[in-house]
Image 1 (spheres, rainbow, N blue to C red):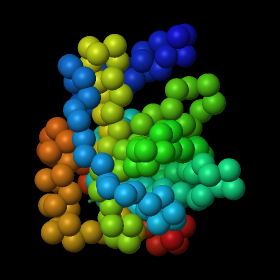
Image 2: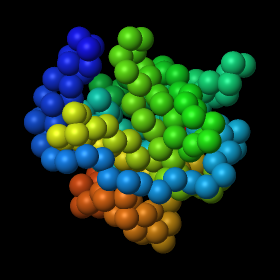
Image 3: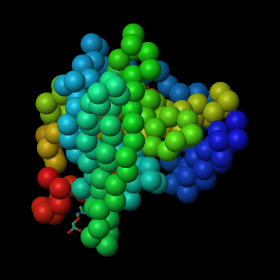
Image 4: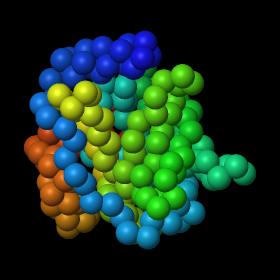
Length: 189
Ligand SMILES: *[C@@H]1O[C@H](CO)[C@@H](O)[C@H](O)[C@H]1NC(C)=O
């Protein structure tokens, strides 16, 4: 309970700071990728757009997923910081309910409750749309979303299709910010 309280205070503070990810009510129902195949989802994904998250400040953001021998997924997030250094964080993701393979729980810190990671849509080879939402006591919720791609850019056509999908999940697409994926050369390709 303590941890949850600390986490909710942190998240509330975060929400107050960026003023955008906090909503009254409970998490909207979102679609999930049917027959999600986690094997095909492994590898590197570049962040194209996101709902602002205070824990990501850099550019050239990317995530690399690796299937571990025990069936969980190693998560390695990296970004290029303004001082030119690379910020990275390691986590673990797992499918919690095999009947819902497109819903993973991701945890970056031991002892902190994991965060939901829902794959709304992916073709595995070019794009992925991910949504994360956490309810607090049924009173409010905080959400995050990411448009990911296998390359550092996506066509406007695909982005617009993904915007439609994320709107259907109750997210205001005007809240999405574009991640700077230019001048990333020399940084971990
Ligand atoms: C992206 O980052 C590069 C390198 O810092 C910068 O030159 C460029 O102006 C940025 N682009 C945008 C749209 O902010």
